[in-house]
Length: 418
Length: 166
Image 1 (cartoon, chains in turn orange, cyan):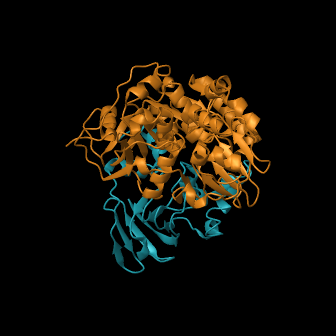
Image 2 (cartoon, one colour):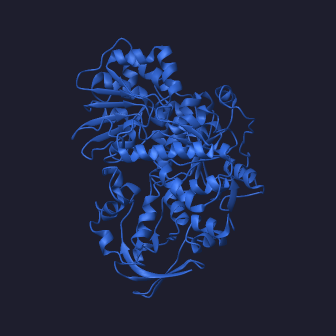
Image 3 (cartoon, helix red, strand yellow):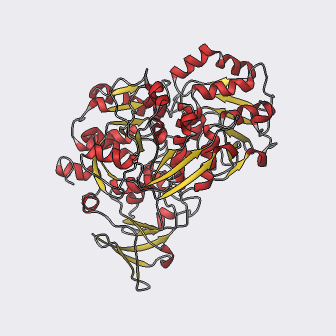
């Protein structure tokens, strides 16, 4: 019987032949904790009274409480700095970028590797053929001490994206439509493996967007096959040799979902659930007050480029606040050089330093919407109160929908402006 | 591992934001304050009604969404001994095992508020002692996971054995 990518990767990391459903103790290649989870992980690790097993296999990243607005969080961040210095593990301080972006940029998440990340949007790295899984603080503590973790090898759902993607359609539209098809628990404990000829036509950054959001249909992770575009994208990032994994042609899948890209249209997740999806035409015209372009889902160069292309030499109406947050310092600098940041500022955007920003909600006290506000966000969650106000509504959308809507002051099909 | 306890019913799709809304409190909020607000939107006063050794019987998708470990940790802290649900969010599922809180997937429609429930984790048999009905379970714990649960979670397991003993 052939194997899925997940079965092959777990087999490699525990040194034996495994199949979905097996319980394994696997060697984890890299473990990351951010400032929302590290304080507890450090406390639990200290309870163990064990040394850090492999300092080079761990990193701490500050992205949630940036800029820091509360003494407790400032003290937690100080604890991270002290711990990282003492145990000689890599530290990426506030403002350097969002953890999922930095894991990819710094070459920690590589094809064929097994990476454990203390944040639910870990699956982002599946775009480069990395099995990246979200973990809790106890697991982070255990990984600091042992570099090993128990896993149940997941079953896999195969999603086939075939056909040519029409202009104005992006990775975000594809994943939003898929989330609607699958529903909140549609992939519980399962890996989503993406295949099909449309995947290779997508820029790597849009593949990251697709993988990023699978956690909210319950998936353990998402993964795609390695190809030339991934190799090219990793060229200036990977400092180690890597060994990509491809699914066997007779691999066993629990479900196969086929999506025809040629009939795709822009999609949005409507309030207050990510699987409450609609084509933009059904909600177009809804007045909006705030737009957020950024997050680990859509804060990369292609996203800023798309937003800038809609807003070049234009001005957003006074009724709209537009917030832009590049996902990392590297992206920020490249976007400055490319002129995107100036274009966005000229159009009326407020540009903030790299962080999770308003996506993380009131915990960061950034851009909390007012009662009754309608927000368009390129981030990944729109639960009631997500951005800090239960009386606001959040629509999740692509950077194109976000930029077009900012310009018109209402939900807008970006293809009308292309 | 055998567990017996009184059931508290909760509904479907109770995500970890509903579990503990500490996120929406001042960052300096005490753990007691977060505990007082457990499930506040759907069952105010929940933590005061729970006694040591009680269990939760929930519906579909218990603990979906974030990898917030406070969710299972605080349930243990208020005395919850096990959680039964029709299904669980996977991050919550892993976190619960790792903090030593057993979860069992079964048809919780066969359980009413305050029923006495017995759970045998080795055989995964759930018995409603109040209605004298046996409830089939989908959960089958491996010897390794039972070992972690018996040790009281992953940290206790690693401390006790000086590393993994599975």
